[in-house]
Each structure stands twice: as structure tokens, then as C-alpha cells.
Length: 116
Picture 1 (cartoon, rainbow, N blue to C red):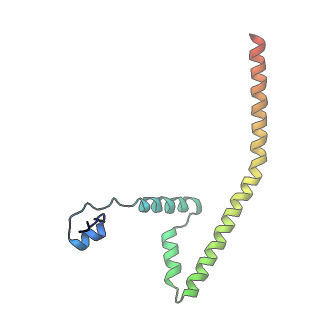
Picture 2 (cartoon, helix red, strand yellow):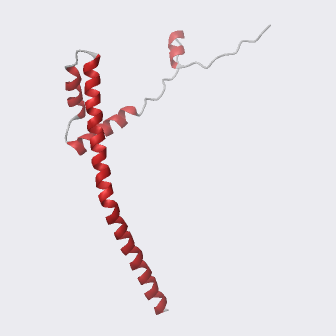
Picture 3 (cartoon, rainbow, N blue to C red):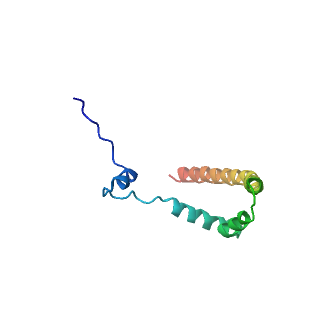
């Protein structure tokens, strides 16, 4: 006689079997989504949910949806490029400040050593 192996009871299986099993904890995706939407509003001044729903509401075909997604993708690329351009401008300034900081630290260490 062969022994049957029992499978773990998932919430879906438990529901199908009408067995009481504790529900799985809710995903934190909702919280992450809300934070991302709030950050988007802070950075752009645009209400992501309202703007996106309005755009897709007028879609009549898959091609319309693809066109909106392509337009948004181009906008995101431009946004990222602008951030990269800003970083490229700031990088030499930060390096110069770091150089002054290192020089000042070396001078201060030299002064402290000479006082001992």
C-alpha cells in the first residue's frame, strides 16, 4: 500500500475545500503605489491617477493604448535625461568641493601635529 503525500493547503485550496485558513497578509504594494503617486505629484505637480485615467478613457483600440504608452515612455526618457544632465553639471562642482574639503582637512591635521 502506498502512502499519500499531503500538499500544503493554500488559501485558494482552503477556500475550495471550505476549510478555515488564516488569510495571507496584505501586500504592501498599495502603500508603495500611494507613495510613488505622491512623489510623482511632488516632482511634477500632476495628479498621476487622474491624468492617466483620463488618457486611457478615450482609447478605442489597442493601438490607442500603445500610442499613449509610447508617448509616456518618451516623456520618461526625457525626464531621466534631464536628471542625467543635471548630475553631469553637478559632478565637477562636487568634486571641487571634495578637493577643497580634503585640502582643508590636510592643513588642519598639519596644524594640529605642529602644535603637539
